[in-house]
Length: 369
Length: 136
Ligand SMILES: [Cu+2]
Image (cartoon, rainbow over the protein chains, first blue to last red):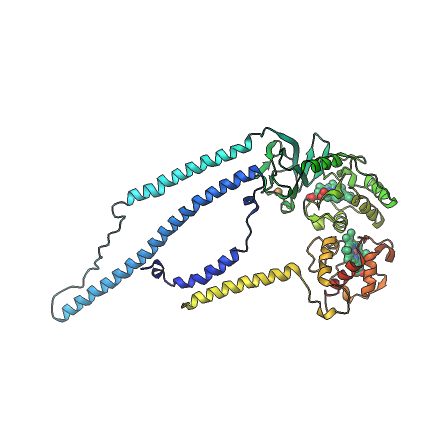
């Protein structure tokens, strides 16, 4: 007898399953399972092993559960029929005058293959096998994660990544480069990243390159990342850190080494001198306004360190305010005038500027290549 | 195959819910307008909406269907068609709005609306989109 015929209304679930499956088919593979570097590949392979252990375990457990439900119902139904039959026989006998009481409910004898073996089944299925699986997965995971703690031999570059409420600073100390929300790395080379926090706990996560690693105030965590393919990788804060946690993202841009070197060189330079008059006025506005208390533009001013993103080469960056906006002229203008409208709770206040001052400032900042 | 009635009902409900979500996301997500009633405004409103988003007009103006930005610096542009004047300077015609977008300082000296280096065709598309918004 096919199992499905035991399940009442089995057919009802067929169309539901089809629709749900069709909806799920629209989902994409999560980034962490599309690794582009050795650390992320290690995590993905652990994930897949766990997945392929979980599949047979789930199938077996849910099948047993299903069988238990189906059989219990069948047994109950058989018993009812049996009891009714007994009662009918007894009634008929009494009609003929025989002196019989109504029968006790009698249980049909059903012997299952488990009879007498239940204790062993529970100990092995519920104790021994899970313990073995857990020991295996623990050892496998620890071994895999140990890869993170061993520094590769040929570390090419070193970056200090500092989490701030709600943006990221990337510093290349050997090259005199400070930038924000965009980290560049050479393809195929191992880069040492020191993770720090300026305020609360953040977590540095680039799913295609590495697992989540906390950024803890007063402590430096070190990881090594390597991107095997050129490209732009998405990163985000993975530890709730306040009102704008959701808008605390960044990009990792992996370039061929020569290209990366020239990026470093360009970023290490002071800000370009503005050429036209409006932009020159914009620089003066910047220096005389509150902007200069928080933001540094190398070659122009030195603000208190670590308060706000370095703007020296702002116009080379792809996004503004930790990937809240694409870095285009209109958005830059909107951000300068109304950061709290765009990213409520961010640590940049709205500054009152006359429209002349604003237009000059926009011209200047938009030219900081 | 005989479908029992409940199963059929559940399937229909799940399907309708999914279809409703998809349609809802489509409209909320893109806000593509029906350009038909405004053929007199030259320009492609769909391309216009994309340009408004790409250039970042949404971080200063609230514009229905334009997703990027906070939109509190300048006036909301959701009922532009009904205004008599543009930027308080020019009578409201599609050509004048285009003129203002191309050269805000020239039309309205001292305005905080920056010249965003929009090109003519793009500005026309933007105006075509803006004119689809608001009351009829
Ligand atoms: Cu966070």
